[in-house]
Image (cartoon, rainbow, N blue to C red):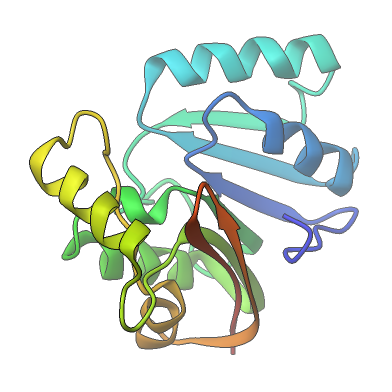
Length: 182
């Protein structure tokens, strides 16, 4: 989320907000003059996030939506300063990833930013990645996502990659990619 660098007065979308931890941080960063929209596909996550925002006194700054990131029809083109996704993009099937990123590109203003945190593939894939992909293929209820090439996906969707950092979580490589719409 640091890479997104949300500023006071900005309009930001978080896709796949889960329990709402990042929504709280984003709402604080944009301040009272800004606006955050959160989109998730789960009713349960929406309820938990709504309660968290109310407890923080930030529910007036955040619009929570239930829906699909491949169809962001409720957001006007060229209207947002930033989009944030953390461990969300890799939940989509391969044909859906470009559609999600194209929608992000559509709704961002020129110079708008997209920050993606994602399990990433390495070339060649390491043992941990191969094992995780096997679990995803054979037991998708337990491993509902899989490592992807996030940087390449952003570039193929028209974003200029500004920054990339790689870390590790449970032995799996994690990539944090900041893209910009030119």
